[in-house]
Length: 160
Image (cartoon, rainbow, N blue to C red):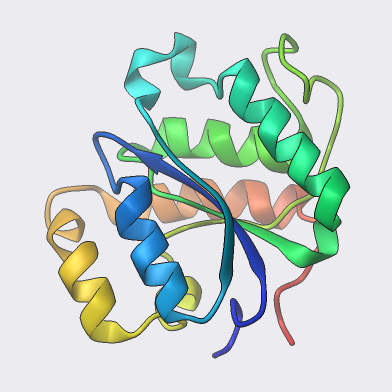
């Protein structure tokens, strides 16, 4: 599937999960354009919430490129923090303190472990960058959490 080909991708890696550079390597193997990449420590932030600076970056990139041209790929180590990130990007900041408070961008958010995103990557690249973490993280719980917010709030389809 060519879900990411020719897309602009925002990457939010996690220090305790899949870091930004590993996700970036995978995304580039799918011929997608990375417009922003970072690695955060979600367990370090208040209740796993996205920080104000990152919310502003996502908001600005959405204004610049349009929601229909963007996809966000995250690498959170835990279902709860991955879900909060997905919710913030798709539905708005649930803490109502950041730039996305009350702003539903509706962006498609995927965890790097999700099958429909994984199949866009060159398998050997994904295996080298991410597969070890699949063995130690609860990927089913993470995928379920992220997908629930995407299904409920995403306004943009990646199906081509």
